Amino acid sequence: MKQWKTILAAAALALASGTAAMAARTDLVLGMPLEPPHLDPTAGAAAAIDEVFYANVFEGLTRIGSRGEVLPDLAESWTISDDGKTYTFKLRSGVKFHDGSDFDASDVKFSLDRARGESSVNAQKGLFAPIDTIEVVDPATVKVTLKNPLGSFLYNLGWGDAVIVAPESAETNKEKPVGTGPLKFQNWAKGSSITLVKADGYWGDPVALDKAEFRIIPDAAAAIPALLSGDVQALPNFALGDALAQVKADPRFKVVIGTTEGETVLSTNNKKPPFDNLKVRQAIAHAIDRKALIDGATGGLGTPIGSHFAPHNPAYIDLTGTYPHDIAKAKELLKEAGLADGFKATLKLPPVGYARQGGEIIASQLREIGIDLQIIPVEWADWLKQVFTDKDYDLSIVSHTEPNDIDIYARKDYYFNYDNPAFNKVIDELNLTSDEAKRTELYKQAQKILADDAVNGFLFELPKVGIWDAKVEGLWENSPIQANDLTKVKWAD
View 1 (cartoon, rainbow, N blue to C red):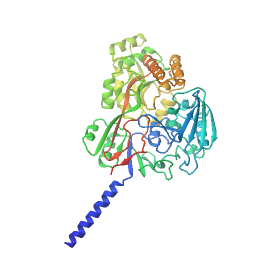
View 2 (spheres, one colour):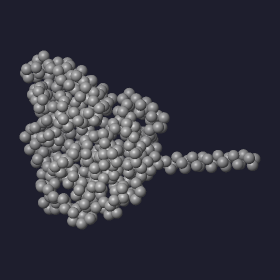
View 3 (cartoon, rainbow, N blue to C red):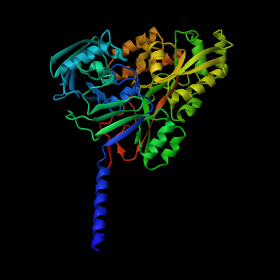
View 4 (cartoon, rainbow, N blue to C red):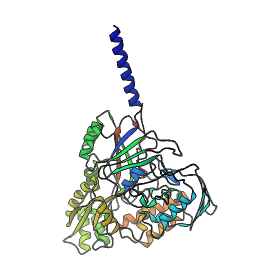
């Protein structure tokens, strides 16, 4: 009897220890399909950088919350002058960078000056163009004066491209990022994973996680066994195709289908013949069967779009009927453009499922009207150089996941090579307008111009398919900004 009591006591102790260990779990492995080309969100356009570092390692004056709202971050408060041009930011005290250096107003001035400077490599340099002057009032106060009022200024400061960096570490952030966030960079095993750990002495609420590993899993077929085995506990944004049904049926996991800011487009080089001809672009628009594309590339989860605007935005208008699927009309337009026999072109595709699968479908659809596309698969770094930077392409497919970014079509050096003075005028007026009703009307005008011009093939809004262990709490359902914010993530007891 005494022996059994000893055995039972030991078993109870082991069970209690095991339960405590389970309840105290503070690590998380997240799978992501693309590896960042480097680790500095202020020096690259790749969404994968922000997906690891936004709100986790780097912080801005403001930040974008899970519902798309603007929240205070390194700026605890601000005041705006009556003319709408001067913003005075009161900064948080006691903030340190992960290398131990103090954060103050001089770091804000350095970061914003660096982002807008002549030699800036910031992918969203245009966000900072409205800034006229930046003044350090005292270590805890910075004053930013704009050239003109800008209704979206606080929102723009919440982008990953606007995070605050220190002059001591700015030049090495691509390999060894140093921020002020609740997690700090530990290791980058290139081609494999990026590891973050809890930062000591964080100024705000500490995170529940002691360690977070972002594991690079380019192939969805490899992501499934990693998830099922428990090797990976979360796939925050993964296209699983037919395997999604299998995971949905497993009670160990939570499947959350949300929205993104990812306007997926058939990117078109508007200055390169024959794509500089409106009739050709209209023909392509008529040849695209969005439903077949969405079914094949997103498992039916994407939302069709007819312009560059997210359907969940209050200012959205449905323009998918501008150029309905009509093969006969598409052929007629090509004939009017002097291309009755069609033509050949290239389609460069980055290494994401929606692009590679969607590219095959688009090529098949355009073949029906005589357009013969040579599909060229490229790695992400090559896409960024060849397509985004050098504009060396005919067509491509990519999701633009930056928030509320219709203004990119007004940038003269942007890779679409689109220039319409009427559109630029609308964007200029939008930038000077703070009244929400007027801004909504201007957004609608901008959408209509892009749709009519068939600037790109407007395909679908990329869905956010999140799958994670049912005991994991706090991951975002939607993606109002390209991020995997871990600040509220924890394991349920």
